[in-house]
Length: 196
Image (tube, rainbow, N blue to C red; front, side, top):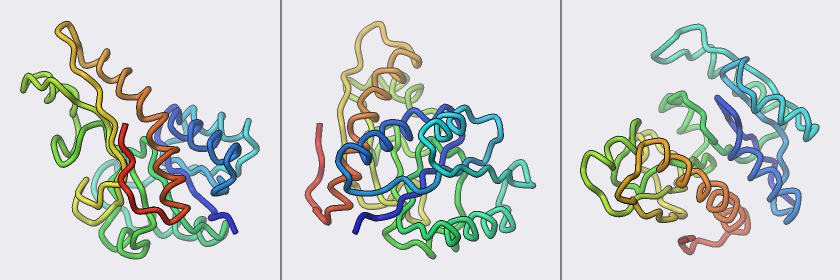
């Protein structure tokens, strides 16, 4: 029985598209819901083209925790009988109580080689610190930001003339390959680290 997956997005949904295509091809899980916190997220249109149910729930508070927002999310997840959540460019920190209610069932892709460069502005910090390598990491989500068990990592070289944008695009290319591979391993119950 394939797991029912919800994919959370805030923008274009390019990682969502990679995950959905992989799930459709390999049949290790089923994309059952795409959820966004922004009505303007173009990824919602892409989800509709895939005929995946999609919902938008906008938080009432611009920043900080909005527990009503999370309660609405939980209702949708229950409604669609979701078993696993993939955060794919979801630009909202979930509360500890939300994360604790899905132990070991929320995955995220982060644009750095964790545990380095948790949080935002990763590529800018990579350049400022003169790193030779960067990349992306798929990890389990825990209450502590970007600190859950690492499931997969892909490396990307930092080139002499790189800018934040050139690094972002090269890392994103790797994300589109790493996230589906890691999700497949996770759904099949394999615990070995996926590396690229």
